Image (cartoon, rainbow, N blue to C red; front, side, top):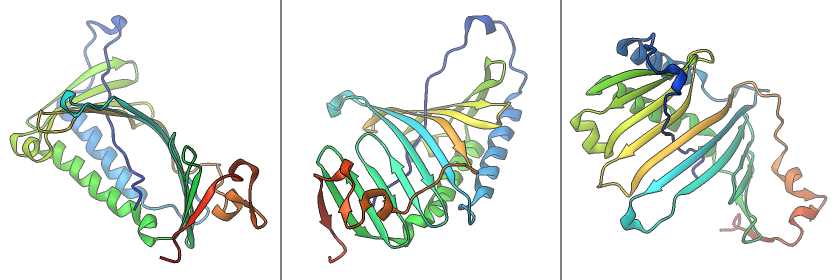
Length: 243
């Protein structure tokens, strides 16, 4: 099963022009801002008939030196509707509906054709679980501090309590929140030495729950008649529907 969720984090510095200015939000206010935001995200639910959700984000993952792995940067765009889904990043594209799921790997010049899985259209259930984990972190945090990033943005630093830190290997979380747009822009997670990941950041560029974008049927996206479109003409199709 392909996972379409990925996560968040980034290191942000205060511009010089803001030095000396106090953050207008008390620490308790920042906690409420984030808890209210989580509640709004839970209330969104899955796309309604005729609606398209559009998400575009950048994820940067820095691993611990002993893994020997380089920093990974991934830019991802996700479009979802009640009946269709489309995902793009540097390594793959996914086109799906209630009947078919196509996974396109451009570097390998392969297209995997699979039967659709209803679990893909239940991503919001898993999303709700992740929001609940974030709420648990905020409610049990050992410390929380707000600072001013610019006129409309604040940085909320969350230090987990000992129990949460042991369970998630999380040392610190930094959240950049836009008070004008009323949404999270960036999240940075810093992990301890027990985790293979040292630092992970997600920056959200687009979070639109009523997008004007359209999602084509996956067959129409890849095929013209009975043949692959020119862009995919020399790709190999691996048909997993028979398995």
